Amino acid sequence: MSEMPWYNKGLFSSLNLRQKTLLTIGLTAFVLIVIFISGTLINANLPTNFAIKMQPPSFEHLFGTDWMGRDMFIRTIKGLSLSIVIGLGASIISSIIATILAFVASINRVCDEFVSWLIDLFASIPHILLIMMISIALGKGAFGVTMAVAFSHWVNLTRVLRAEVLQINTSEYVALSKRFGKSKLWIAKEHILPLVLSQIFVGTLLVFPHAIMHESSVTFLGFGLSPHEPAVGIILAESMSYLAMGAWWLAFFPGISLLIVVLLFDIMGENLKRLFDPSEANN
Amino acid sequence: MDLKAENISFSYNKKRQILKDVSLSLNSNQIVGLIGDSGSGKSTLCKIISGYISNYSGKVTLDDKEIPDKDYYPVQLIFQHPEKTMNPKWKMDKVLNEAWAPTQELKDTFGLKDSWLTRWPNELSGGELQRFSILRALNPKTKFIIADEISTMLDAVTQVQIWDALIKHCRTNNIGILAVSHDPELLEVICDDILYFKDINHI
Ligand SMILES: Nc1ncnc2c1ncn2[C@@H]1O[C@H](COP(=O)(O)OP(=O)(O)O)[C@@H](O)[C@H]1O
Ligand SMILES: [Mg+2]
Image 1 (cartoon, each protein chain N blue to C red):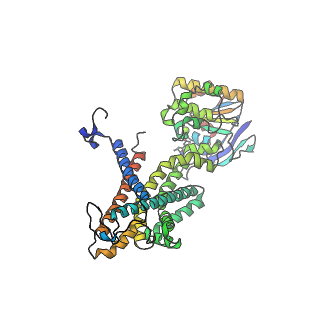
Image 2: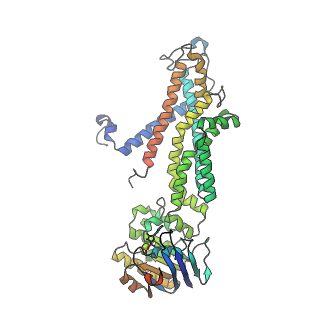
Image 3: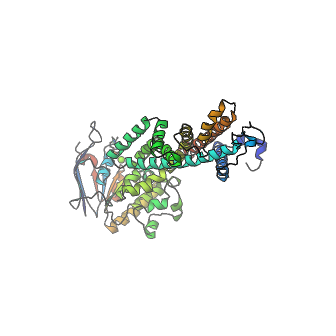
């Protein structure tokens, strides 16, 4: 593609599927990283200025201002970046849980039945209920919410990994490795882990949008982050009391932004899955 | 050393018994051929002798002692399809060194090129891969090699090369070979003795 400038051909039409996938992943990752970094650079204690309180969206304040004159755009970015941090923590922890359980299931039949039972148990409780219970039990706050989201989102990945590990365990190279006198732990680490690593990675990213959505929902419902944390769930909950006064922008823009971030993560996860999917890989 | 299989019976499922009262014995200075129809159960017998299948009846012994299952198994099976016996996410270097570190001399004997070591299994041909799977099975603790149609997929030249190297190594190191094939001409060339599967399987 070097001989012709991309803007002449139309960027997407000149790329093959793999390049499009990579480009999509790159762009979504870029946007999310920009949101995250700008959020961390923002001081949580935004300046208040009652002279400009409750202003509708304008060029000066894209998302309007709240009842204390704080810029809603900045608050939203800060909130989203907090959501991303919690989502990242929760996704990673849930993937670690899933990986450990998948390997535990492969030890023997009793362990496998135990893990299956655990999967069925957690799958039968609605996520939001489970998250609320765990969050309350762990004293809410960022830690409580992160753990709650993590402990409610390992189920799907565990199912996938368990089946995968089971299948790898019946392979000839694993059987051979046992004949070479290698231990189960060695086989898990050297043979199985490299084969499921990409699945763990994609699984982590696919949990991300759920994690963010659920973190915001429990926070909105008052079972998550505390009211003085700059979370999107808090912003949305507060804005409810101003909706009746016609301050629609307090809920609309943060809500839409949250949705966009969730969608971006979803798109990135799906594209990464496609990239790693063996049925579409070139070998 | 003597490898003995005594009264081995086995079936994968209730519908059909594959092996019935199979007995054979093999000394570590011998190369014995095993010939039989495809689907008759030769590979199954190989897997039992080399410890891959455990729920059989009868016994497999080495110098009249049962073979411990946890350590390095002194009876090593080499498969027909080497690509299935290699982790696709491992470079050939790691594949080769999983059981032991073969000497450079031995690598040369088997015609193993250094440039292959940095590749993935799917970047090598069947013949190249088979050299790896034979070589890694030749750990000094190996007393017997069960070669289950190891050269069936290979061209004539590679076949000769591989068998030459394997036989030379096993003769000098007192390793016994059970060579399974459906090619009587090959077995007649390489074996001291040939067993007919239908004679030893009393089905
Ligand atoms: N894992 C298995 N489960 C059920 N049946 C099998 C399995 N492996 C082999 N068989 C059956 O056992 C019979 C013997 O197979 P095999 O030992 O591979 O024969 P051979 O090596 O002589 O060609 C065949 O009918 C085959 O279909
Ligand atoms: Mg066979």
